[in-house]
Structure formats: structure tokens, C-alpha cells
Amino acid sequence: MEGKTKVNAKPQFRLCKEDGKTGARTGCITTSRGVTAETPFGLVMTRKGLPGYLTMDNLKQINGVKGLHVCASHFFDRSGLGLRDGRPLSEVMGQEEDSPVLVFCGLRDPVRFNLNLYPAVGSGNISVETEAGVTTACQDSYMRFVKEAQPDFCLSLSDDIMNCNGKKRRAKAVKRTSEWLGESLNEFGGSGEELKSVGLIASILATERAEDNLRQAQAAAAASSDPSVVGYAIMGLGLGESEESRRGALLSICGQLSKDKVRYTSGPSTPIDLLRTIECGIDVVDTGFVNELTACGMAMVFPTDREGVPDPEVEDGFNLNLWSDEFIHDQRPLKENCECYTCRNGFSRGYIHHLLECRELLAEVLLEFHNTHHMCSFMKTIRTTIEEGVFSEYTEEFQKSYTINTTS
Ligand SMILES: [Zn+2]
Image (cartoon, rainbow, N blue to C red):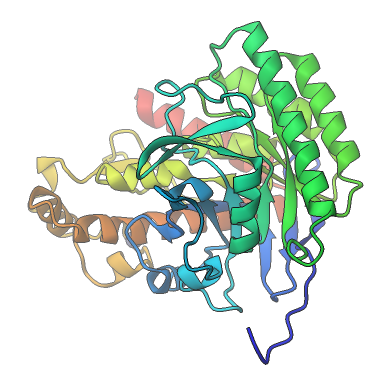
């Protein structure tokens, strides 16, 4: 912007505290825009740079939102990938220069892209689902988008495959992901001013093959001596793998990475999954399951304070299904003592049930306010327990209380 001096420097991660019993850790990300975000935290998933049902102004009212995941594929239309009028993404998203929220940019939408329906990649190209149908993108078009958008973090491309794919396909996917990292390093190295404030996140494709994971993790760790690389992304998870293989891959990969770089992954589908992911040493994680719950008319109500116990009235201990007729006359807030916009302003379970029945979008707006706030409170508790050295006890208790709640 004219008249303002913009300091161009990449985001920095600082490790603060390591949990003695697990791989969990706290840290802090700072950027030259003056953003400071404590890790671990969850990324709010977006559609065309905006949250599912809220505006950016709404989002700013929620305490604890630290980062957004923006998918380049959402900006694809018939004339290709781009922001059209060349406006920086922060402007499209209604973020001021001093916005307190970090932007992570990837190509594909990890929540909506259906790997079952579309072949993952052609030669040199990668298929993406866009508003104009399924099409292909490549390293070049993605990099052009990143230069235009100027996110804080850019994930290098990865050839995410389904867990059931065969040996040959897996080897190819690993090779492509590594090649794309090499191409990204070249692009960042030779880009001059254009990518100066964008941090490159080196993608590693998690597979069921331990040797592949080890080799890639070592290669990514070596690549991170390049000043462009500010972190790692562990990709290909949340695609039907078992809990055990997911954990195995995360632990073995994280074990090889340098501790002073930020680590990202996608894929957890429940709060317990989220705890298990952070336990492996992940700092930034997608929380796409929150969007899915909102879209299904669900409200998260599990306790987010350390001593809380699950409400025995809640069937699975975690969520309320507001579509259910049992809420017609329920005048209580979604969760007692919740400080979110929805619960503070007297929108009751019965009212939200009614809005869903009438197909009023306000239902999803109110649920997204609550669910996003709830996720942020949960992440805050997780950070505190790591800081205080009681994370593994908290995780065990959390898991135990839900097992009891759902089996009794
Ligand atoms: Zn609430």
C-alpha cells in the first residue's frame, strides 16, 4: 500500500515448551505484520477466503481465532486460477494489514475434495474441484496465485492419495510430492521480492510404508536449511487410514524434523483425534470437522475446561443434533455458561431447531459462531495443559470420560 513501509520478512516459529511425556509442544508464530499466534491451534477452514457462514467481522468477534486455511482451488474459474483484479487476498477477505489472523494457503480443499471420484493427478498436473467443475492446476498456476495472494504460509503441492492405492501409485505420489517441493524451493529462491514475506511449508506425504515416511522426512528436514522453508506439512492423512497407521506416520515423521520449524497436518475428525494429533508434535491443524458439524446442524458441547465432565444427557458426549425434535421446546442455550455470541444473546436450542426446520441460514450462522468459539476454547485448554506439564493426564482423562459416557 502506498505511503506505508511494508517490512518483508517470513513468519517465524519459536518453540516454547515441550511436554516431557508426549511429543506435544507449545510455540509461537510471529510475522512481520505484527501477528503473534500461540501454538498449537486449529485453522478455520474457508470457502473463497471466507468462513463457511460468518463474515470476517463476525470472526473477529470470536476470541482465539489464530489462523485460516485458504484453498487456491476456490479461486479457480473458467478463465483460470487467480484473484482476477489483482487485489491481495487480505483485501478480498476483508482483512486489514494488521489483521491478527494468519493465512495458510494450499491448493486443494482437504475437506471437500473427493479423491474417490477424481483421479488425483495427470502428468505434471493436479486435479482440483472448482466452481466450474473439475479441472487441472500445475505448479506454475499455483505459484502465480500465491504471489498474487500473499498468504503468510504456502504449502508445497502434494499428491494426496487414498490409503487403498497400490504400491506403484504410492511410489509415484511420493516422488511427485518430493519433486514439487524441489520446484517450490527453486521458485522461492528465484522470486526476489515477490515471495519475500511468504513462508514455504515443505509437504511430506504420509504413507503406510515406514521407509517412505522416513526418507521424505529426512529430505524435508534437509530442505529446511533453505531460508524459504519455515515449516513442514504432513499430508495425505484423513483419507481412510487406521488410527494406528496415522499415529505411526505422524510420530515417525515428526521424529525426523527440526524442532524449530512449525508443523502442520490435516485430517482429525473428532476432538480425541485432535488430541492424539497434537500429542505427536503437531502445531497447526485443520479443523474441517467443525465445518462439517455446523453444516449438519450439530453443536459441540463437550466440556472445554479441564475439570469438566461430559453431560450424560448428550448421547455421544460430544455434540447436540439440533435437527432432533427433542429440542422443540428447549429454551436452554446450546451450552450453559458458553460465552459465544449465540449463547450470550439468548438464541436457544429450540429456536435453532426451528431455524433448521425452516431452512433459515441463520441456523448455520449461529452454530458456526458457537462451534468456532468452542474449538478455540478447547485449543486454549490444550495449550495450558502442555504449559503446565499435565497434557498426557488431560488427554487420558478426556478419552476415558468419553469411553465411559458412550458405553454406559
Ligand atoms: Zn455458545
